[in-house]
Image (cartoon, rainbow, N blue to C red; front, side, top):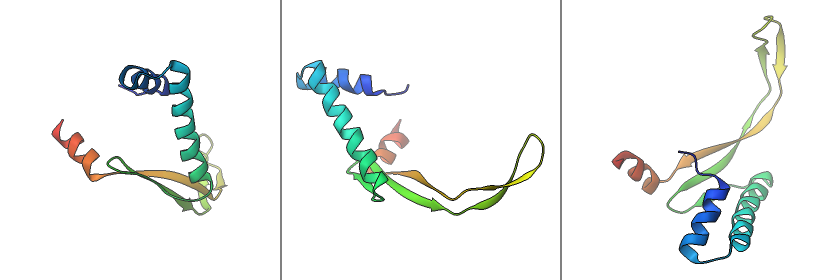
Length: 94
């Protein structure tokens, strides 16, 4: 099962008694803050859940799988996630 932003919004409506509009705004603000923090180059740590970190990958040679021609894969930053201890324990118990 995939959890969507809409499902998070409905969960807030059901558990917190907020309006749908306020719940949606709260979910959007949370994800915007995570995006902005990662874009700024900082880590995001969610206690009891895990850490989102940025990893810098250098440019490297690659090969086009269709025709076999070599090309360079450009340098980039990628987001990695490491689950926290509580999340790992919950997943192992399931």
